[in-house]
Length: 275
Image 1 (cartoon, rainbow, N blue to C red):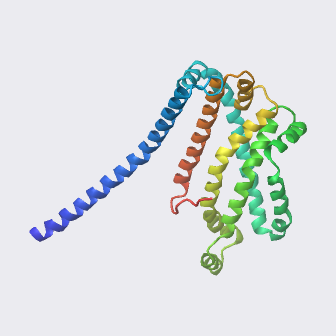
Image 2 (tube, helix red, strand yellow):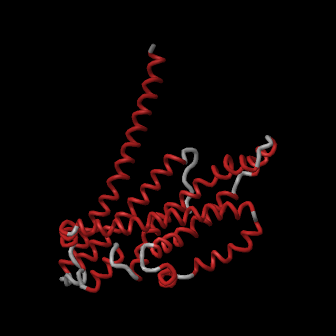
Image 3 (spheres, one colour):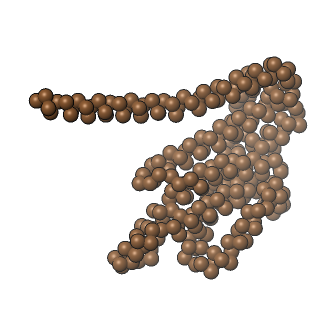
């Protein structure tokens, strides 16, 4: 009895220690970001107070928070417009990238012919693309969606091509031995292999889509986070300017974490690949 109890007690103690270590790690992951944000805000408030920075140059955190509360409805109305543009551009750009990556993997001649064109278009700065798209598509939501889509397109295309092509040769040979059709090889092997790469690109696109929508609003718009930033800048309303930036950044962060959560739900068999 004593011989059997000692090993069981040791296993239970080891399991308890492991669970405690995991719990400490979880709390550390939760608390350290909050501590970092708090340290940043305290440093900001301290520097503004000590250096006597004029409010029109850099407002205090309390002034920004007060503006967020006082103008919350206006900020949310403008954020809704930018969010729609970013989400539409995100969906359009990534779907186009996935479709073209599929063509490139199956038609190497198409990849060799058109991939340099894609790279060339991607090298054009966003601020140069935006006026062209406004001239082509008008001054509505269409050019903002197009800019967001273009920004999302290239990282997803590169990662998706890489994921579809980097299939284990042994797995590919096994599928051929089993007389798998090209369709089965694509969906059961290539697509499954590409998902970690795809989600790495989608997490990048989640942030860049918002940036693209805001940049598009800078060129010509009366509503949206980008338009509000321009208006606050021209009016020297720095508290509103900072509050608008905070709102846009918070939406980008939430969008990023939504994609990360979706990745955890879909890609269960492999650790995410860093782009």
